[in-house]
Image (cartoon, rainbow, N blue to C red; front, side, top):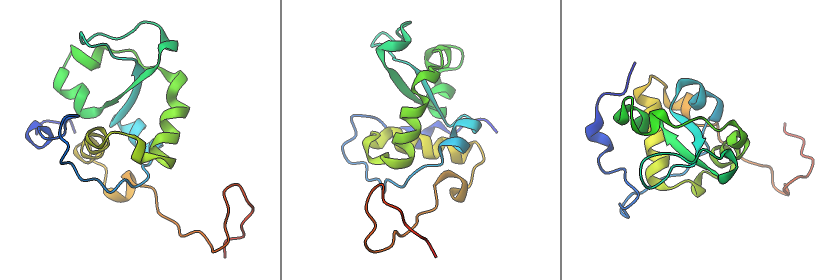
Length: 139
């Protein structure tokens, strides 16, 4: 089901400092598979992308691709080199994604047919005494 209701995305811009987000870890695999997010070559200010895959990457939401049609981000090449970085951002450090981009990804996933239980990773309470990288027996 394609993204068609662009009105709800109007406020989801990088210059909107009033966005409030509960940054929950995202289900990278499900969102990538459905097209709610892509890692592309780094976008340039003129609307094109840098052809050098080593120059960095851009996080493109399904909404970004939908509003551009056959121009804009839809023409930007995927940059699979940065998928591990994007996975880590979405699953372990979602607060490091801009609020507008995070919300674009979530809304894109909903518009593309995913339910919240498929969009967000289940939250788990770590046992007392857990330390990063340590061995924990979950019971």
